[in-house]
Length: 289
Image (cartoon, rainbow, N blue to C red):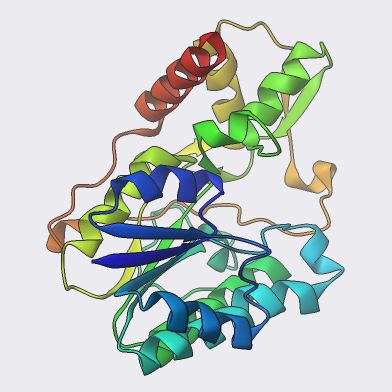
């Protein structure tokens, strides 16, 4: 099987690419631009893949509020163009989405199923939801995978970053840290999400799936766990979303129910604390190498 992986240089792409069972063609910008449909057509004509995996996205959540056209160009219209090109070639498309398609239900306290009605509260979330609909409408052979708060070892060096690395960096500067304590979700290790993706690719049960590590935690408590597991003393205190006042609203609760993976023969990922422990261990090993 031949795979084209768009966004292969990102955290998820770097963990997923080595696991794929066949020939893999990793591509990224400037080789391909989701906002240039003619470039997508040329790419697929050249490589003739059996499957395309899209790990690329416009993911500047706050910036999207000021530049919605840029967010929709990549996350919605670019994804729609990709879905159409894949459908024209009878090619499988795997696309990654986000828990930010939820959030409108301010009183939610139970994990969301893929069948639950979405309700984004930000431009970013709306652009990703539009991209989901495009894939599901335009490309019959598809997997759409919603996930949350990705962090991977490739974000610990070079230009990459993630929440874990940001917390460790700020703690190292000795600055007081205030992290929101009223947003509950499940930050997820890219290594685990990559394993889920490969498991789904072995099935023909196309559709929409949720894939995160298991459990639920606020961002403040996740930051506390990072420092505790890393053996770092940090001046950390909780704050509220209202006090933090980010340009984009976030879902107050966006835990995803991943039980649908079982029907496809794929095990749900491990709990978030175990995953975080391994991430920090992997990070230390890479630093020592």
